[in-house]
Image 1 (cartoon, rainbow, N blue to C red):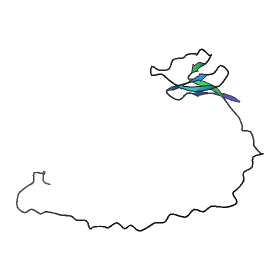
Image 2 (image 1 turned 180 degrees about the vertical axis):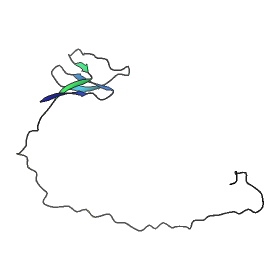
Image 3 (image 1 turned 90 degrees about the horizontal axis):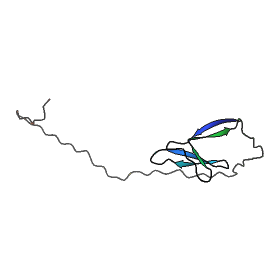
Image 4 (image 1 turned 90 degrees about the vertical axis):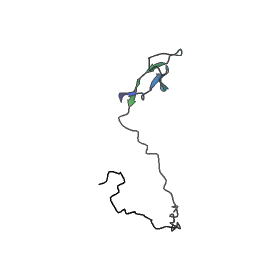
Length: 105
């Protein structure tokens, strides 16, 4: 089995228990600083964990298949009853040499 470092997420650190094991703590606003507690726990930014080379086989586990399928009704669509109104557009035409001051093109 290989050991690797597991780093704490940003803004947190590990507290390593005296008996083994660890837990996460949030860093104080002033930032992380290594420390120890009265009960023997110590802080660290990472812990060493063991990586297994292979998984154990579980040949005794069986998976049962359902005997009956449940079919759900498909959702139905209904026609929209919203009334539609024709799009109304209005245009004005001007004759003469008056300009609107909009920078005419």
